[in-house]
Length: 136
Image (cartoon, rainbow, N blue to C red; front, side, top):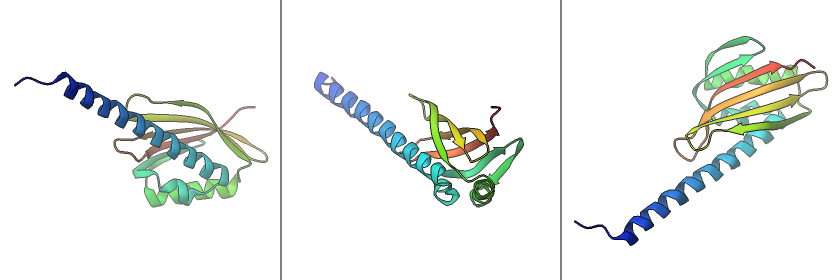
């Protein structure tokens, strides 16, 4: 059975277009997560959590369920209310794993934040967050 060159080109274009849409969705979700970090909204960030999340907050770490991780992140935001959050580095293309390195600023402290996630579908799923006090 002969394949038409036009059909092969068409299928390739669909594949490339779908990959581009998926990456743009990750950027949109990443922007949402950035906004929620700036607001200190653990509830909204938890919407993107995987079933279990590895949290490391200043050396205290563990694997937690979505609800436990949300609770721990909420305590962090209460203790260190945000003044600003910005992404300083982003990586992960072309694979499904994505990384965001951010700077979280409070009134008296600065933290380095590493968010790890994946996107097998259109939705970003966060499986790990490290929040470490920066040495200024």
